[in-house]
Length: 90
Image: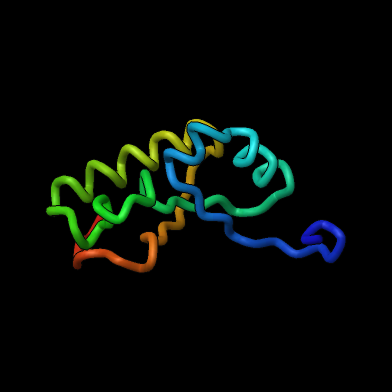
């Protein structure tokens, strides 16, 4: 549908999903959409606002590494359910 109407979007992937279904990331990339990071997994006990600073950074870096191996450099991040402690990743 996006291709038919020449619409580009951002698709956010978790690192775990990207590892398990890498063809999905490749498909989105092939169609010219932006690929963003959505953390490593979507488990409620791994939500960014439940983790300490170091673990948040580790989870973010792990996800970023996995996704960038498939998609190239990514620039967008969205925490699952927008749950995040006040942390600067830059």
